[in-house]
Amino acid sequence: MLKQGKIEVDGERCKGCLLCVRACPLSALKAGATQNSSGSYPVEAVCNGKCVACGNCYTVCPDMCLSVYEQMAAERAA
Ligand code: SF4
Ligand code: SF4
Image (cartoon, rainbow, N blue to C red; front, side, top):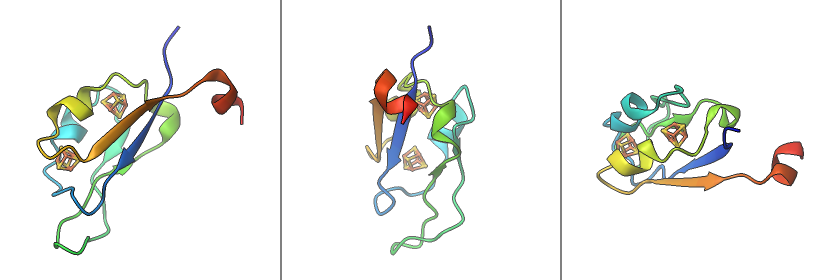
């Protein structure tokens, strides 16, 4: 059974390089449209229901802006 995951982006650290967007096999991340205080456009989670907590995005991010959580069944039902 596939895991279900959840992503959190540190919007102030993200520089919008999009390496994580390219690395996600399920298109669960997208380029953001809102500028942060550094003038970058941090990525956004498209839909947390798509993420399977594979960790690819976390692995490729050069600035450690992403947190990946594996959701438990009770959280998914909520
Ligand atoms: S953990 Fe995997 S599925 Fe989830 S957003 Fe990152 S690359 Fe995509
Ligand atoms: S790889 Fe990291 S710095 Fe680059 S867009 Fe993704 S979260 Fe932002």
